[in-house]
Length: 469
Image (cartoon, rainbow, N blue to C red; front, side):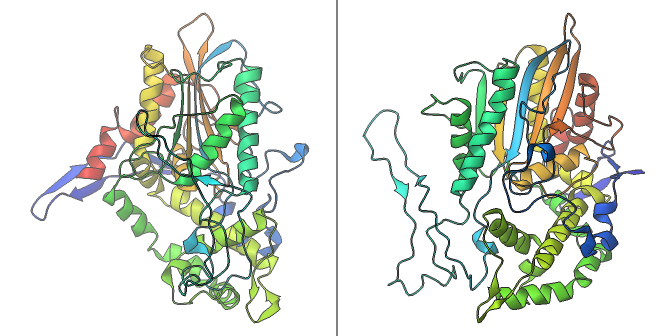
């Protein structure tokens, strides 16, 4: 089942310009259980399977959904196609586990969170000129500051967000696993880091740089310094940070439908229990227009083996694991709806994340044409990076991309020929889609590029026209 979309945009009060997006075809996800409210609200389904409380799962279960540390490419499971030579690899992955965002903390937290086991460096050093002292932030709450606890209801030595010590350890293992495949197994990456053929890239969010530094050092233990690429926040394609009001309007429209409101209406009792125990204002629309805030807070606790929150005046009256699991199922439901299930979700994903797709397509084209020098590009982003990319590729089954979620693009050339093929891995395995390409496992290069072209235009011009008119 699919639908084609045509959007008319107004560029002024007096004139209207039609930007055709007919080439963007929405193929509904084949696995509909995650979008079935009857299943989502059934406690017996637990958390759709998977883990929310550990970064380490048994080897025989590796590949299962683990929100705290998602599966990724590693040597134990990796299978290289025979008769092909790897030409190019591009990775996009979400940062690793962290504290919650400040906006997702409760008014009266029952935990004292400490980050004394990590140091966040922040300084500027001129290439030529004065010497500087390398500084790091030592976060604390000043007891004499009468406003210290107004914006943070608990004592803490963390920034919000900040990659935790455990998240940095996960980042290191991620880097080692990538090297185990592209370094040791395939002998594709150079033994010494080569800035002329490799590139690491982060967003303006400091947590992505925190992860990049650890991951790159794990891949190259002798790498003491690294130039990390970063676009300005206003036009960053990885975050993404560029403005696209028409795409925002599309998403706002389908999140205003009775279909979206229905799952909120069915869970008012859940909201009431969560609000009573957390101290969140029941009239705060940010907390009650979706489950994003509660999901982030509760998952951050469990991923760091912290207890669920309790009533500030009654330590035995706490948010139950049953309710936490319900929040997680509802979070999956919402992400699936926003980026995959809603009819206009493919249009939204393609335009909202189209700048990155255009960049990726340009680099692949350059590699085939012999004009691209890079062999490995690594982008560290957010869940808001991975989700629209998976939505645009039309993954068959979309859950909330957990910590460390990784999408890997591999460009292969058939030996003794000029035929190129593309493999896209998610969680270390070929990505299952509902597009005519099906599983993205050695798809002819021309077919894959044609699909990306249908999303964003040959050189990304469709994104530009759509977002700026």
